[in-house]
Amino acid sequence: MPEAGRPAARLGMRITTANTSPLRASADVLVVTVAKPPTLEGVAAEIDSALGGTISDLIKAGEIRGARGQVTLVHAGSGVRARRIAVAGLGKAAEGDAVRHAAAAAARAATTARAKTLAFAVDTVPLDRDLASRCLVEGAVLGEYRFDRFRSGPAKERPSRLDTVTLLNGKRRATERAGVVAEAVNRARDLQNTPSNHLGPDGLAERARAIAAAHKTVTTTVNDRRFLERKKMGAFLAVAAAGGPDPALITLRHRPAKPAKGVMLGLVGKGLTFDTGGYSLKPARSMTGMKFDMSGAAAVLEATAAIAELDLPIEVVTVVGAVENLVSATGMRPDDIVTAANGKTIEITNTDAEGRLVLADCLYHARAQGATHVVDLATLTGAMIVALGDMHAGVFGRDDAFVERVETAGELGGEHVWRMPLHDTYKRFMRSDVADMRNASTAGKGGACYAARFLQEFAGDGPWAHLDIAGVADIDTDRGDGLAKGGSGWGVRLLVELAQSLC
Ligand code: BES
Ligand code: MN
Ligand code: ZN
Image (cartoon, rainbow, N blue to C red):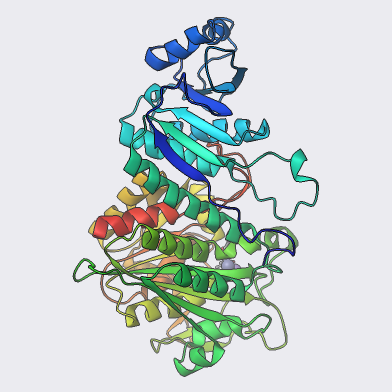
């Protein structure tokens, strides 16, 4: 885990509200948002006149245009207590995503200028104060994130990290809640970005234990290979057969004092800390980035931590299948036939379709633990990336009401999902001549849909939704939302909203 001499984790950022006037708030950077085209009214106009009209001059000169994500830093004079003003553009459609983007861009600009304290003039945001508070916090916390654990240069020469984010005239509850959730997103990003030689299945298990130790409503169990054998989890075991780090079946439970009756939310995450493809080896170009194949696990673990921290009154059981898909003499081979925990037999036609094997037994396990509603998150298929790109995760499920609930939870959290089909006839693509099914189709089309159809065989009865997050889990090109490259922590916000909606 952390290198010697480095802190295990940075001390938490302070995320607060204050009723101080923006003119009197002391901060390294005070953020004012402007739409496109920019007009200065109310608080923004007051700040402008306190600065002697600098902002309106820059607007007239065309330097500040209010374009979404554009940030202009202005050094403040004596009329304003903050050291600098950041004018952050919202673009034409000033909705939640635009506010998140503006806040993220402002936080990045501020930390590049080595600011430690950031304040937002919430009244300059054209949304209701609840939503504005939430989007500003999410944007700022996610935007200032940097993964610099492995940089050895002097910290002084790197961008700073924020100590304090203050929402001037923000809504307190919304601010604090968003702070808890956004910090959970960043912890998920840390897990994602950490490479396999520093975070294997045991690292995920260690994180689960730490979550349980930190919250009195949470307990955890980490099961080893022997347990998988006893439970006849032949699909999971097939992936673990190559050896390497020991596999771990991680179960976390959140049991609040007064949970909603009749609901136990099951969160299942794919935790492949590396995926080489196995004997169906990935070409070198597709193998880099496969440290991110545990992104589903990162999301469900940190969502569980946030749910516990918020003390949401709902029982949750979280299941992570943590393992690596490696190559060795003991590894599963194409043509092998394995038996999953639910008794179904699977012909291995492609060892690179390993995620669905692990998830098959994890879904079964989640139901066996009593989950009434199940949602799984997995970087499952390259086909998902081809289909939807990097802004929407695909959601699959047969229970319309539950899928809609997942869609709504995503929208609230700024994590967009798009419904994908799960037609029963897709079964034909997994027909096997020798077993109940095979793990990969050779159709060369609809790969994300067939993978989902495979999972359905193991999802049991009751509402279930599958989120294929292969396209959204890690970002390699600027998505135009102010998020850094690398792990996005995708799913944490959606899952917290989903849990809340079931309370
Ligand atoms: N982890 C991959 C999916 C993936 C690919 C995620 C690229 C992120 C980026 C998964 O285990 C996989 O290899 N899927 C195969 C399935 C195929 C063999 C049926 C794929 O998508 O190629
Ligand atoms: Mn694979
Ligand atoms: Zn994989």
